Amino acid sequence: MHELNRDSGMYEEILTVLGICYLGKLTVSLTWSAIQGFRAHVLSRILPSPSIADTYGRWAVITGCTSGIGRAYTVELARRGMNVVLISQNIDKLSDLAKEVEMDYSVETKIIQVDFSEGRSIYQKIATELDVLDVGVLVNNVGVLHGTPLYFTELSENDVWDMINVNVGAMTMMTRVVLPSMLRRQRGIIVNLSSISSIKPVPLMGVYAATKAYIDHLSQALSEECRGTGVKVQSLIPGYINTSMIKSYLPHLTQNPYLVPNAEMFSRHAISTIGIVDRSTGYWLHGFFAYFMQLSPSWVHLRISHWLNRNVRYNIINNERSKVSQISKHR
Image (tube, rainbow, N blue to C red; front, side, top):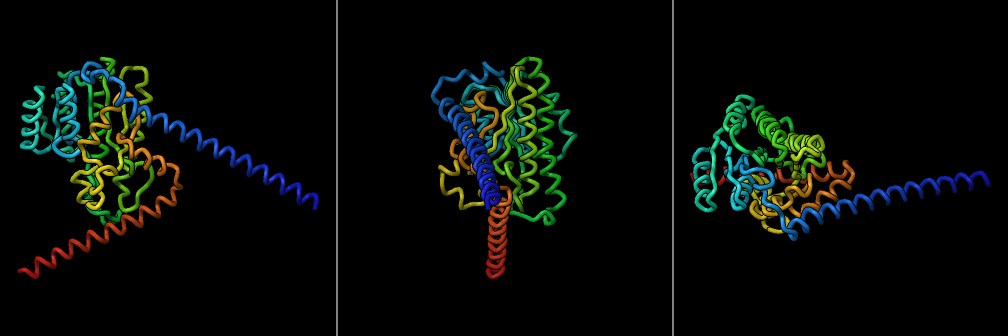
């Protein structure tokens, strides 16, 4: 009996120590996250910030700039006096956006029309066009997401290559194009648009989430590599933003402007964090979602996200079938 009590007491002590260690880790993590969040979303909006153009360079390059977050970043950076290089696929939309920011903000613009899904062949053209410019900011925004949550075996080969070439290839190669000149000038910032889905695997969005995890991981590695050089690399891991991509995927989420801000609101918040933090959700409320996602066990997140995406997939497919049925009846 004495031996049993002694063993029981020893196990209680071990569990107590483990509990204290876990609480200590949780406290440190929560405190550090709170400090980073305060710096990024409070101090950055209260304290006067230096001009982005004066700090990093006169030209900003934005990929995927004709809609959503890319367009909002373009307009906000132009409003702050940055000349902008607009890179996207649709020449008409590029021309319209260039005229708009030139007229509204009296800045210079440059248009580069490319299709990022073409892969390796386009980057020599981009490098030649950018070589003569003082590029201070690069916003790697371009990305693709299939409109319906799909199991991996349901993805077409084109879907897979588009996500690899656009989400992974564009960010990597655009960074490779501009980073050497930034390092020579000892100034510049690269902003890479990842996603909150990069934190944990997401069933039925597996390839997309994996490409965003790649962006986040490479951004953090480059941020450390560039430490002390005058060049910064920022990874943005936002939650849902009210863009056409999300409207087609989860339209009901866009009804709450505070939980799901529009691209303009998000970009104003996110740009204010430039030079303040190297990794951020960009929007203060999304920071809470990201923190609790990181705390949750992976298996819990996997089960819940699988269930949610499966239901979304079911609803989208049923709605599409209903529309087809209605059209058939009218005929």
